[in-house]
Length: 400
Image (cartoon, rainbow, N blue to C red; front, top):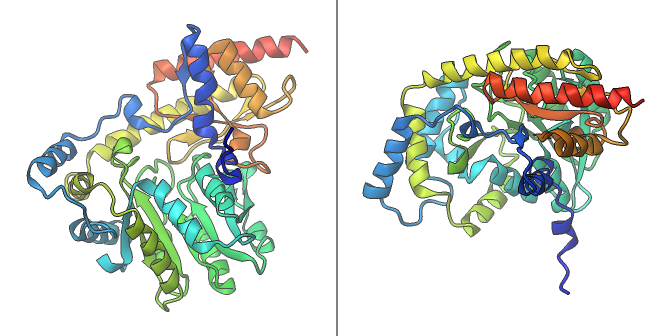
């Protein structure tokens, strides 16, 4: 028997790993209510028609050969225009790169920043791809706490304390996956001050930037010029194009400190040739066309987040902080009858057919005793799922 590499077998993406037992249970005839994946198009959200029309036009009329490895010049310029309009970002198309979703950007950046043993600060809990890619390339993810008792705001003091001479960068995710937090301007500026003080590059994942329904989103692109930073974004969430796999990033680095990082990243992007050419054409249309559909999307998500907050806090043994953005929430569960949050989500899945993600999959240190849920389904689906969760919790507590 041939053995897979240790690094490949060490990958554990909790959001998709829970699909394996869910599929097995479904094959046995159990109906699954899948609240594990943040895919808006699986529910009652639809990609705007003019995006689709642009894709059809691209397939029929645009050159479908290989594209520019950095991304089509037209799309990169559209990104420049949109980021300037949204956040006042002072960038040029030369600063922008296009990837196959933000996930590829995370992969390429961690491969570029890290040698074995190097450290990267990550939010805990935080989106697991970052932690997994850090480990994949031999790095060490160093989580900093998001404080549940303060609406999941970042622990600024802990960020400072966890910096070492091996720290190569720090990651923020705002609005946050998995907590639904939106960081206030003060927190972003404090993090920026630390990054500048220690000369540590900042990587800001802002893929949910327009999905903010409480508070005001503040982009790291607005930080002072002495903060070397890379802003990541994409089209999967705000633009309702999850399967199209187009993401992007841009550098803001006035003093050239990231020149070699950019070259290392570009060497990898040239190696993989290019991002999907027709979908880049459609992504350009998504940036340049009407944006009114985002208002309705936020209306739905706020309504569903409000319901989820109220309903989950009514269930014995469950508590949750209010989401202010993104499409996720991270409730806490009393693990009286389970040894771990993983055991809890598997027991719920096999008993009631409700699929959630274990909180430890988002951070071993700060995600334990939690689970992630989504706020995407219509209210009747959420109501059914949480009625099942309440029945499950009441039965479990009656056994103690």
